[in-house]
Amino acid sequence: LRDWFYGDFLGALRLDRTQAVGVKIIGNCVHPLGLMQELYDLDWWKSVKYGVLMKDGVPSLSGDPLWPEYMDLEAIEKKRREVPEPVFMAEYMNMPIVSENPIFEHRYFQSYEPGMIRNVAGDKITLRDMMIITALDPALSQRAGADRSALTTWGV
Image (cartoon, rainbow, N blue to C red; front, side):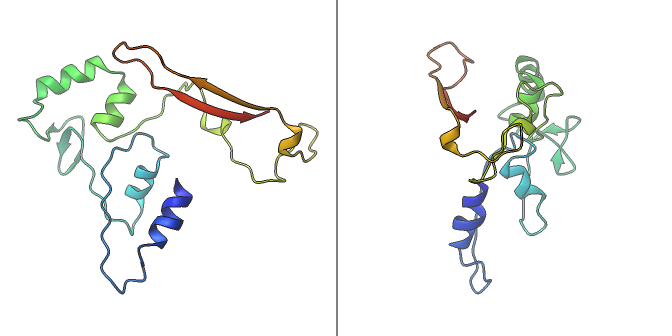
């Protein structure tokens, strides 16, 4: 996503400043390492961040409802009790947090270029030397709150 966004997408916009170009991206910062959070932190990217509770123009748990006609403080507090704290912070406050005990740690996931993969002895290996595994969780449950489908591919 980052390669596409910074390369193909922004590159296609003629950012040579000879023309005014506007890009509006609307979404939540659902992870502190996600593209939305990265853009928010950039000096050259103008960003506005809203949370369901705002104080002095920024999301704050001690703030007032952003849109009280839609969701008043009582409804916000009810929602906060109903969903896990990381979900509330990301989806409603736009302040993503990472669990202290994640099931899959960020360091477990790495991208490799051909020729970079090495076995435990330090020898370079190719994809042909690896077992490629693809797993699908079709998420067949229809119950509310059930997980969505997931598709992963691993090289081991």
